[in-house]
Amino acid sequence: QVQLVESGGGLVQAGGSLRLSCLASGSIFDINAMGWYRQAPGKQRELVATITSGGSTNYADSVKGRFTISRDNAKNTVYLQMNSLKPEDTAVYYCKSTARTTWSSGFRDYWGQGTQVTVSS
Image 1 (tube, rainbow, N blue to C red):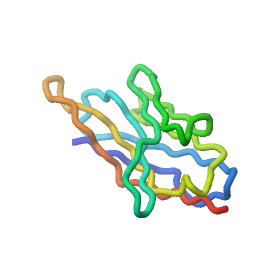
Image 2: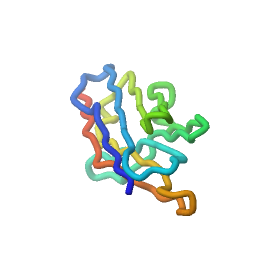
Image 3: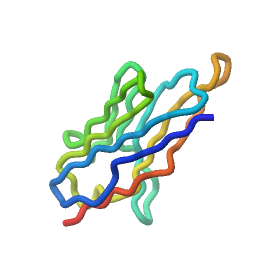
Image 4: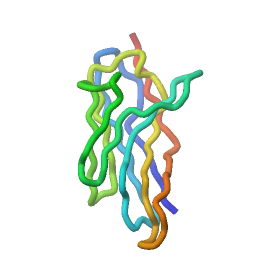
């Protein structure tokens, strides 16, 4: 099994910054993509940013130029640097990892428990 633990959420004023971290642990053989998703009250979960093991990134249009995703493969950790935060960024942020636990097992998605980000106006 693979466990994901997010940290770094909190309350910040509009225009401020936060840095989220997500550590993957457990029986990990290797990790393919890692990413961040968010879910605001009454809305569906949406993609924020993803990064492959090779470092290729993808961002939602709403966060391009403000958020930066990065990862440390040696530490099985993915980060999300969030700058110029807006009230509409308020949501629970979830980490996702696509990983396999053995050489012969297939990749599957694992999710963290989420961390709350609240941006006040």
